Length: 281
Image (cartoon, rainbow, N blue to C red; front, side):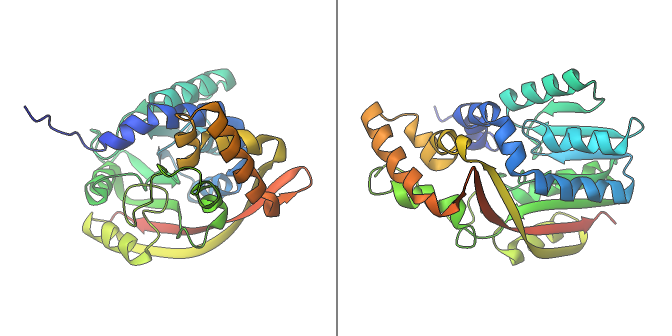
């Protein structure tokens, strides 16, 4: 008997397994790394004076919580993510700081959102993982009020983001089983093609699309780099299945490849991204 696959099965497996656990363990480092992106989205929420915000692919909740702090108690801020471990941590963080932000463990591609519930939908690197992006953004359009805005930050191409692919290049000779990135497939660089983003939003019912390139200075403490490399991304995920000898050899090679990004006690790099805006009309 052939089993029917559910939408985003592969992503659900990843983010409810090793991928999600790694982001939970590295929450503080990753939030610090991507705080400049978070700030862009929170500034957009404040400029709109949003009353009801949905954060798609919210992960451990950093952007949702920051938006709730900035917008104040009258605003409704909701984060949605497919990862149970990340949503669990987001809820713990909200409770710890007494935030009114709430979190939903769901696949935003198919979740039954309340119709016309949000006046702003944002995402920090959380919308590139849908296996049917038109269906996903149509579902988000259903959740948007008339006139609501969409504000996203997504990665540009792998070639424009060498920091994000250095580990794979360094590890490839030692890890023949390392998965190859497929252009356009769900994943980090799925929205590298500006034209593809425009077509997806047009076909899913969004209008007034604006897509602009930005280059954002990001970083993390050098003391966190080894853990980051051993846990996150294709190399980190592959190493979790490797023996100790292989792990040691790969990590030594990979860590050396990141020397150009180390500046004293910090790791610095440029995130080449698109800022994407659209409107529900």
